[in-house]
Figure 1 (cartoon, rainbow, N blue to C red):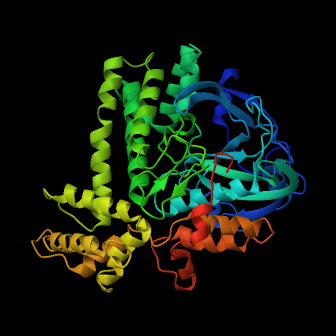
Figure 2 (figure 1 turned 120 degrees about the vertical axis):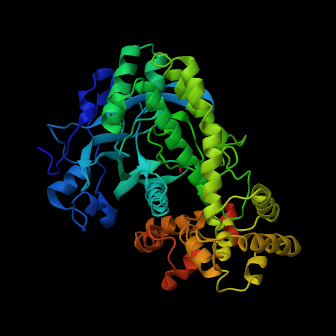
Figure 3 (figure 1 turned 60 degrees about the vertical axis):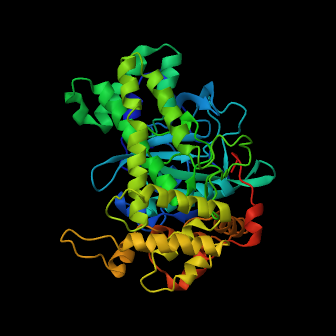
Length: 488
């Protein structure tokens, strides 16, 4: 059949070493768990979950003869070691949907069964991991952080074995691109430099066409990847998000948060926070993310060395750390309501992080309460910190610093104006692990209502939502016992 959706499929124009044609393997008795109405409208699709022939196509039960699905081939560094045997092991690129702004987005079916790149896996996803990616990507989108998104997800009666027997599910992921650092690494290490150049040329043509006029378009492309990665990492650090598995095959060339597995938003602030209990050495801890991103960019730069002189690669890499410092400092300045830069600000920031880290103070709650000083008593902030004396001293310094802020006309910034701006960048709601776990537990019993309720606050995390106030509560004691691994 021809696809009932208006799909294009540019990736099919690549030669065969770039992918393998694979048909989805349908699940038994597939049924919708969630349909992202808000995202669907961006693509001109119905607010309601599709039925009939559209549903059958999205469920992988029928295929598009004109635009067959494919599994991408790539490689990558996993926990620092190069692995050539990678690729879409459980996901298929169905084609491209064009949104109402005229921008093409990949439509990707995750959990669609075996591919030539499945290695020892079964090509499946389970309901648990599918819910985590669906909610995680939408939480990041609500925070304004570059990310893949999910159009919907569905479950089935197909039994899949992980640590226990679970039900197979699939995710309909959308992204402006599914091209990873590992795509370039694959062709570099295979010494297929013609394919490497073709990939770079197509990326420039698809995503940065203005770079074709540059004297050195490949250098300009690498610069864009560095800059996009900087923005992504600065955003992660500012909200207390840890990806968990920053392998180069999980790094998007567009700087979009990609492949949600054992991720986590910090509850108590902890520089050494490790969401992945399989990461025994803490390679992908919260504090390591900036340096790991640099490591990954270095690996990408090396893969591009047939196209770019080494000195120019190094020149672009040297921009990373100052760019990240500026971007992160700017985001934290906004979170603290500071418009100007003063000499002691870095010390003020460092002392805050040391205070939060020493006391394992809830990061999201602390920053939000700091945004409410125009109406709340400062004691509500101090009460969040075990070291009350240390908190009071820091807060006094912070408020004295705020009193030095003036607008363009030299007039003092009022606490109301400052706090209103802070509330627009300090979320009240983030996807805490225990909230996702509650939604998973209910969904595994056939109750998907918790997913819909969570989506309300995750799509608008800076608003109050009085009827859903419990989603902003501090985590219960049992939350610390949740273990997330790569299978999650």
